[in-house]
Image (tube, rainbow, N blue to C red; front, side, top):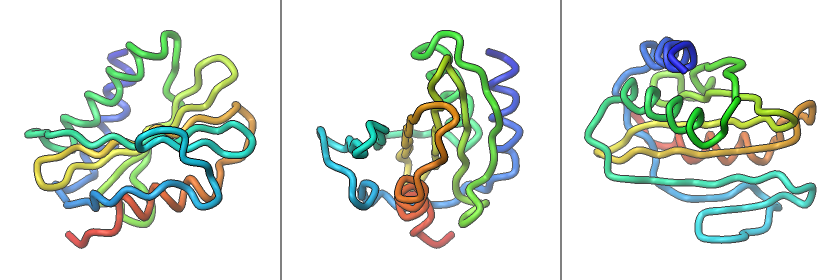
Length: 143
C-alpha cells in the first residue's frame, strides 16, 4: 500500500492546487444506472463522487490510493499520470485487480474533492466516452 501511495503522490507532486469543474456528466451513450453512476452497453462502470475536502491534491492522491487498497483487496497500481488535457489540475491512477482495470481520476476544487471511478475488463481498451467525460468533468475550470 505504501508503494501505491508513493506512486500516486509522485504524480500529485506534479500537480498544482488547481481548480476543477464540479459539473457532472456521464460518458456519452452510457445509461445512467444510479445517482452519478453510468454503465456502458458492454458493462463498464463509471461513477462520480464529490465531497467536502479541506486538503490538497497530494492529500487526495494519498486518500485515493488508500481507498482503492481497502475496497479492492489485492489491487496493484499500474501507473499514475496527470490528465494530459489539464496536467496541473487532475490526475488518474490505474490499478488492476484480477481481471478488472480500475481507473481513479481525481482533482480538488473549491474545497471539494472530485473522484471518478471507471472500471472495465483488463485487456479491454479504454472507452473514449469515459475518457472524454473524465476530461470534461475535471478539466473544464481554468486555473
